[in-house]
Structures are given as structure tokens and as C-alpha cells.
Image: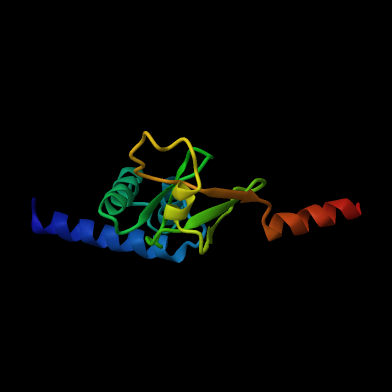
Length: 139
């Protein structure tokens, strides 16, 4: 591999992660690609998807599997939960004092399993959609 190729990939990686880190909406790879492509159309979809997948596999970012079936990405890698808006799909972090170990301790049916992961997803309606719904009720 040539030095130019390595440098180009490094620059692309920096661009992708600068844009990713500016996104606070737990974006999917497609959302990151759209934001990257808007500013840097020369960076391919495959490059963005590959860089995000590699970073998630390495533990530098978190791959969030939500019920909408699209993987989302989060730069907060410590264990935490998420809340998803039922109407617009917005995702936000949820901090709780209820650790995963307590969830397992108070759950039946897992005794014959070696639990490797635990996903807890809260569902609701975000403030923006609540406000939109209130405005619609006025008419």
C-alpha cells in the first residue's frame, strides 16, 4: 500500500469521525454517510460504513441495536440505555442507577443461559413531537 493511500484514508477517517462526533442523534451509518457526502462527495458510502464498523468492532464507538432494525452509532461507549421516540425515531441516552447485573438478578428465565448482552430500550414521544401534537390539537 502506498503512503498516499494511507494518508488519504487517514484524512477520510478524520473527516468521517469529525462529522460523526458532531452528530448527537445516534445516527445510523446512512445518516453519517449523508452528512459526510453533503460536505465531501468524494468519500464513498462503503468507506463510511467500513470506518464505523471498524470503530465499533474496536470499541472506539458503540453500535446500538434498536428495535427499528437499523444499527445506530454512539460515541458514548460506557454502558447506558436509550429512549426512542415512537413518532420520529429520535434516540437519546438514558442514565440510570439500575445496573445490568440488577436486571439479571431480578429476572427469571435466564438461569440456563450464559447471558452475553442485555438491551433495554425505552419508548416514548420526544418533546418536539409532543409540541407538534399539541399544535395539531389546536386546529
